Image 1 (tube, rainbow, N blue to C red):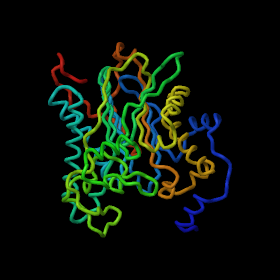
Image 2: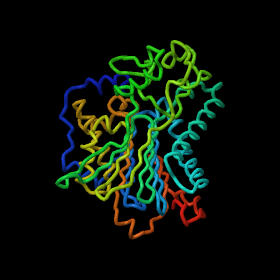
Image 3: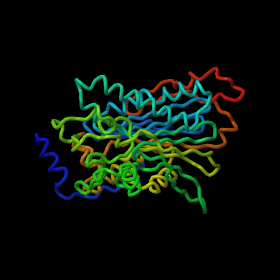
Length: 391
C-alpha cells in the first residue's frame, strides 16, 4: 500500500491523464444511476415548489452540515461550512433553527431582527460549550463555522450570512435568459472591501490582515471575517498558548477580531424569480454563479443539486488533469487537496402554488446524515391566525 505522503504526491503530481470535462452523456447517466461519492435527496416538496440537496465529503471528517425544514407556509434552509473541525457546524445545525422557531413563536413572525437574534443565541450557546470544555479540549476554541440561512415566508425571502457561503437567485431577464444574482456578501479577506473594513475597525493593528503564502488572512491565520465560534479570535479568555502554533497570536487580542453579526438581505419574491441556490464555498471555488444558474435552468429538476456537485468535482479533477473516476479513488482527507466539502441546496420557486395553497408535508432533512423526518415548524401552531401566524 502507498503511504499517506505517497498518495498525496501521486495525486498532486502524477502523470498527465485525460481531461475530466463532464459530457452531456456523463451528466445524463449520473442523473439516473446515482453516484456513491455524493449524498443527496434528488427532489422533495416544499410549500413553494421543489427542492434538491446534495453533499460531497473531502475532509477526513466532514465539516459541512446543512438542513432544509419545510412547513405549510414557510421553508428554512441552512448551510453551515465548518473549519477546524465539525463541532461548530454540527452545533448550528442542532440549534439555530430551534432558536429561530422559539423567537418566532414569541413574536408571531419572522423578520431580520429575529434572524440576527437567532444567530446571537447560537453563538452564545457555542461559546458556552467552548468554555465548559476548554480545560480538557482547548482546541475547541479554534473551531468555527460559516453560516448561511434562508427563510421563505409566504412570498418574502430573508437571507442571513456569515462567511463565504453564497445564496444566489436565478431569474428570467431579457430574452428569457436566466440571470444569476448573488444575494450575499463574501466575508473573506481575499475581498478588498473586507480588508478595508477590518483595517477601519482595527486602526491600531497593522497586522489585522496579512498576506501569507499568497493568501490574505486575518492575523495571518483565517480567511473569513465573520463566523460562529472561533472563540480564540473573539475573547481573550480563549487565547491558545504556543503549544498550538497554528493558532497562536503574537499578542493577545484586545477586542474581537471576528464577528458573529450576519449580513442581511430581504425582499419580496418576484414573478421572474425561478430558483435559489444555497451552497458552501466548495461549489463556488469551481463554478461561477452564472454557470451554476445555467445548469439549474437547463436541466431537469430531479437530481439538480447532485448535478451541480458532480460538475464541480469534474472541474476540480480537470484542474489536476485527472478523470472524475480517478478523483473518486482518492481517499477522503487526501481529497481535500483537490476540493473542499461541498453542500448545495436548490430551492425552486413556483409562484402559482401560493394561490393554490397546496398542502405539503412538513419535512426536516439534514444533509449527509440521512436524517429525514417531520419538521419542527408545527411548534408554531396556535399563534393568533388573524395577523401573526407565520405558518
